[in-house]
Length: 130
Image: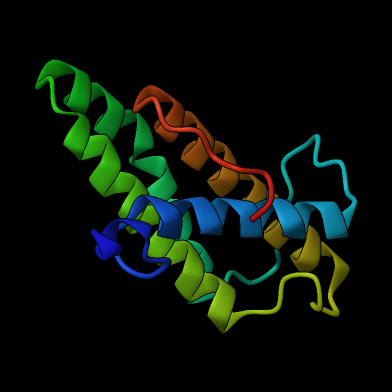
């Protein structure tokens, strides 16, 4: 059906597009994030993303215990929705404060890693570009 290739909503292409967007940000940022980065003031959207990222291990454990890959799929969808809200609310590469910019790039990188890992568990590939 047409919904299965829709780039909006709870679909694989929506999640894959967000992953590709994150990879584009990382390519443009051209930064190697090797250590923890602190930002002076966290934006509300950053806090929400961090809270959601912190629940990832619990979601994976619950999905395994309950033999429910849908828990992983739903988590990734919620993460992608939250990331897109973050993306629309703040400047990432255009941020004037360098430490905040580095933090946002690192946060984007972590979201991308979780998307890729979660989709890997589901047997779904994520494209580097779309």
